Every structure is written in C-alpha cells, then in structure tokens.
Image (cartoon, rainbow, N blue to C red; front, side, top):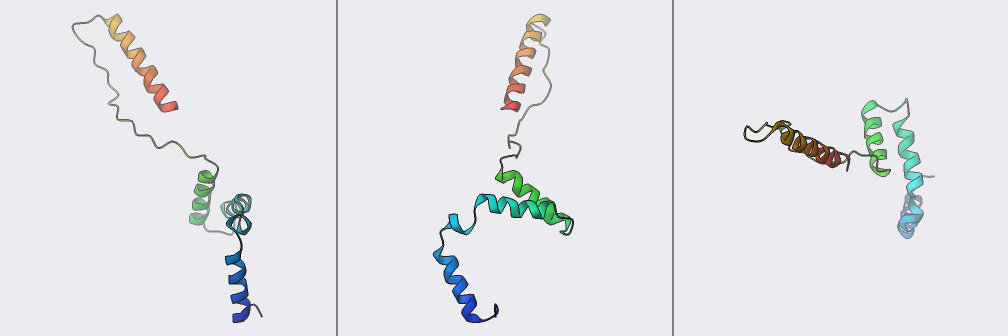
Length: 101
C-alpha cells in the first residue's frame, strides 16, 4: 500500500503544504543526528560526520582564526634587556588574548 503512486503523491503534497518549522524542528534534527553519531550499527565515517554536524549545530566548533606569528622575538642590541623583556611580556599577553578571543 505504501508503494502505491497515490500514497506517494499524497505524502508529497502533505510535505509541501507544511511549513519548515512543522516539518522538522532543530530538536528533532539534533536527536536524529545524535542517534547516528552514537550508534554502534553505523559506520565510523558517518558517525564522525554526524558528530561534526552536532558540533556545528550547537556552536562547539573551534574558531577558525589563523595566526601568522613567527614565534621568535629578537633581542635588539641598542636597547636594554629590561625594555626588551617588557615588550616581550606585552607581546605575549596580546597573542594570548587574540588566541582566546
């Protein structure tokens, strides 16, 4: 009975008439994806992809920020070591703040 063209057409019309909110809620999607991510019967690749989708849905992704830092701060010959140390500490604090934001 479910394979009948009339049934397929009726379901298609029903789906098209529903609003997106009624069709699938974020909660339902999350539960479905979570079921895939933690199922022992699903292959590993699908579970990893489902876990990545869950991370995006809930905002658990790491920030995509590229830092172009050489990691080396040269000691200038003309200035004092104390002045260089102060600049180095300030530079490291700024880098740390950028990474955490």
